[in-house]
Length: 256
Image 1 (cartoon, rainbow, N blue to C red):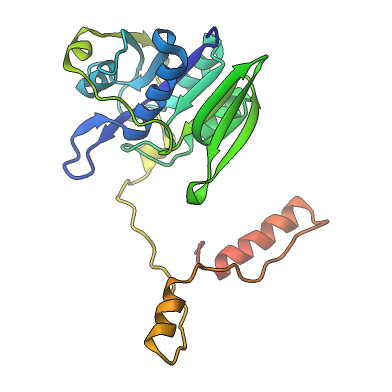
Image 2 (cartoon, rainbow, N blue to C red; image 1 turned 180 degrees about the vertical axis):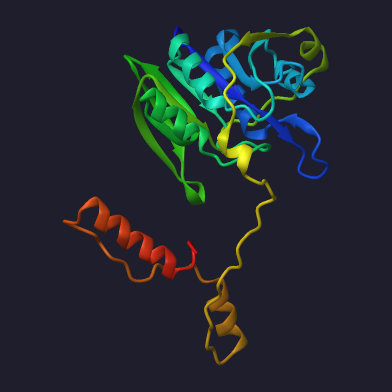
């Protein structure tokens, strides 16, 4: 395959110990890239080239990995955008959200916006790449799939339905090369003023069920949620539409 494919990776964290490791979804992006491009796959990371966890990606069979060397707290977006634009990449694969750092999940969207590329969210499989376009499968809820035809170049976030990453081997991890590239360091303004803390799930509002028997209560509790009343906004300006959406979010308690 002559299509240039790049997988973006980050440093993950073990869910229990917090120990640095390869990120699960990013490893799936590497696995999918290896299946598509083989040894021609390029893997890219923005951060500390001396991070030992990066070698877990090399252990998947990579001969080398490119690292845009940046200190902690630097904004990776400008460096990644400039590199991908100059590298001539046609397919860029990445996880949907980082396991460490800010972890907002916005990086793929901001990258696609800066590059002017289409973005596929929840990629499960790339079926074919021909004549300047790719045929891909997008993962949907309840195990469903949607087939999309996307023009090259494009960026895609990999879903958990994508192929499971291969185990990292010690030998290739030691032999692989980490190539550092010097880039302009730009401080992340958000991290400099924000305070990071673990996310807490919001309480789920339960509807009061009036049932006469235990069987009715069980049936009501296990029934699939049905959508309530809706509203179709037509013929409104962008400002009026945004105001209507904001009002609904405030009423539902999503925005406070």
